[in-house]
Image 1: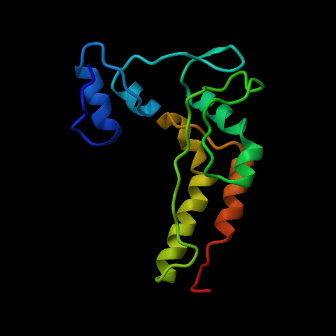
Image 2 (image 1 turned 90 degrees about the vertical axis):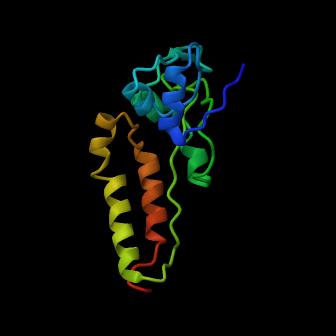
Image 3 (image 1 turned 180 degrees about the vertical axis):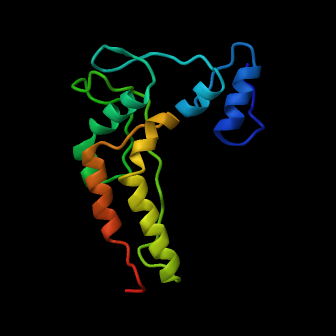
Length: 153
């Protein structure tokens, strides 16, 4: 019998799964590990049984580098068999940022923050149980970041 989660977001799903005998849910790796939830190895197209890890998610993202170069919004689910170490149920988090903001000073701060998270901030990703960006996606993000107007221009 399905039980509806009345709590918000991944924290709510994790708490509901934890307190529901036999409960199954899908949450970010950080929430699963932080709440001592059992996780599932999933068989990918290569036939490998893959544990959910940050590195396996990075491998999944990297397997879609040519597709992501065309459209960064594509899902990174069920990578091709060539991605032997890729976790088949992975995803990306997106930032929606206007190319030109009403407040140029705030826009510049947002742009600096994004620059940090796609470069230096990657060093903290794995300690927080998040996948690092493959170089190909970092380069794509740099191109998109360059489209954001700074200084009211």
